[in-house]
Length: 255
Image 1 (cartoon, rainbow, N blue to C red):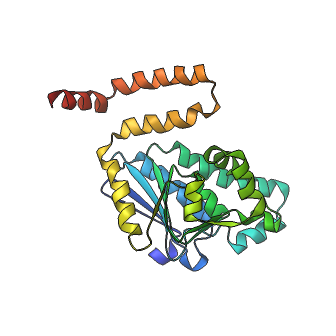
Image 2: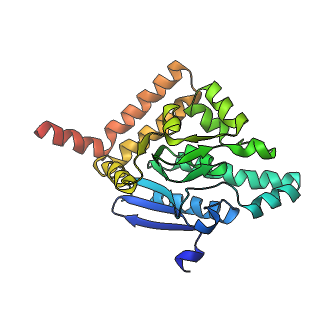
Image 3: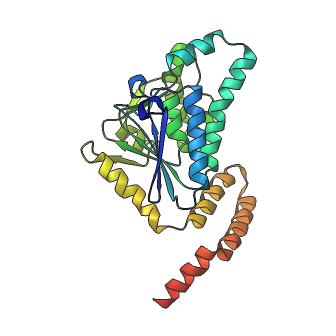
């Protein structure tokens, strides 16, 4: 299958799994085939012990514009059960991103709107070019950014989340960083070089330690303070027993 026919491209470059939305003529719009391929690529990155970070980007001018027109037509004509099954495919993708052991980094340029904004928000880290645009315009067509709301609410304040999901407005990269939706804003001219430099830092980290840290960070969301601390004790002990930790301590002590 040629690159043009593949909805998602997957390559491994050293310690980086590069996952690219590959429907540039459709502004990388989401459909069930693309979502299924994304889940497959994330699972493959998760199984590859050489991979330290998964980098998600979009081919062409935009990161992702949300659901494509065919998918929207399907929604309008589907039964309750069919819509429920369809909605679960996106939910499962968001869960997959959280369950992948390595950091999932979204590199956003152009527009990240509706489901595309949700996809970026679901990633562990978001890097963006200065001219990028973000937004949840679903309410303008009577729709709700429902699955991503649980993640969005953990990223930004309650009032900011309410504003984003009920006004349907687009915001700039700088505004997205100010409210906590993205981590870093890079200049358009140096964006790809800056992204490469940022993700390269994960080559210096322990895969097992990052995996444990990621799982713990998301696990403590629903715990009270004591339970969160007790879980931290368990993870701390597990980390101490890993080969990475033993080797790291030995190297540190030799300095």
